[in-house]
Amino acid sequence: MSGTAQANCAEASEPLRDPANLEIRQLEAGEEHAGDRFVETSPTGTLFHLSAWRAVVEGVLKRQCVCLAARRGGRITGVFPIGLIRSRLFGDSMVSLPLAVYGGICADDRESYLGLLEAGQDLARQRGVQYLEMRNRTEPYATTLPGRDLYVTFTQDLSAGPDRLLAGLPRDTRYMVRKSLKAGLEWTEDLSLAEFYEIYARSVHRLGTPVFPRALFERLRAAFPHHSRIFGVRKGKAAIAGVLCLYFNDQVLPYYGGSLAEYAKDAPNNFMYWSLMAQSSREGYRTFDFGRSKRGTGSFQFKSSWSMQVSELPYRYHLVRAQQVPHLSPVDRKFQLAVSAWKRLPFSWTRIVGPRVIRWIPSV
Image (tube, rainbow, N blue to C red):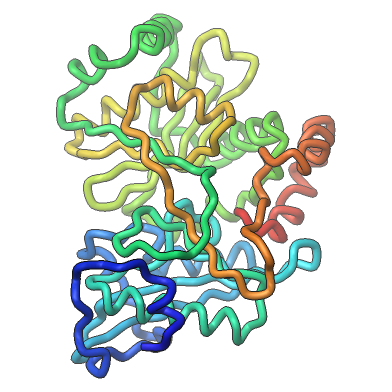
């Protein structure tokens, strides 16, 4: 192991195993299933570490992906999936993982973790990118790599059951849920992809964010037929809210969602997320992962009102050509003019231009 990885890792009590027994190389075609089997049984594995996620990134965003794997005695002990982003506007970078809120290194032990970190850093230097970004869900082995205090995630234990979960909500949130339950709204799983995409596209336009192409959601559903579901909210025959959920082990993650502004008085978001929590609890899922939010945003405030467990996301960066950690979030002041301008664009234009623009934004 070189001094690079040793320098990047803070002191830890766990001793390193003999590095001579560790092999690190890229997964080759035909080895995806072996990598997936490791991820599905690893405590730090997520849906985003699965090979199908990389296939979606390559198919929709046209970004080259690789997956580094650590092996000991022929057995996989860690994986590090990475996507290469080429952008004339922001410069080239490497991200683990594009489109994902969680990523980084999934490893069984400290030696595998450090070996994969070193290999990822070497690859970033070879490619001459600005930086390598690791979207860690957790950080089992602390490093001295720089990060940014921006993202948190919200989770709720569902094991108490719907009645106790409702009683445990903050008073104002419980009031909004009960108000929505009296508004004549219907929870449904018959929302079409076309209906969902229309709602989602209008929601992100309202936020000033370029929309993903519809092909992303088609590919996600095809790639994860047993790990994804679309739910919706109707009022009468009108589809007024929708959410695409991802499932992994005992967790449910409402990943893409939105609602129509003209029905805000009925609190469709409160109805939708409460209905999803209650149904997931009844179906035996243990963790409701409300997902990543940026501090200072409306989604952060909304999720905070549900009194869930809040965890910092320790995203880390290996700087290669960049001199500082990138600041590419829409909440940064330098992007406010662009966000305001995007909100003023006709919605029909954003449906055409958005999918072309978003491909070149490293932070997606």
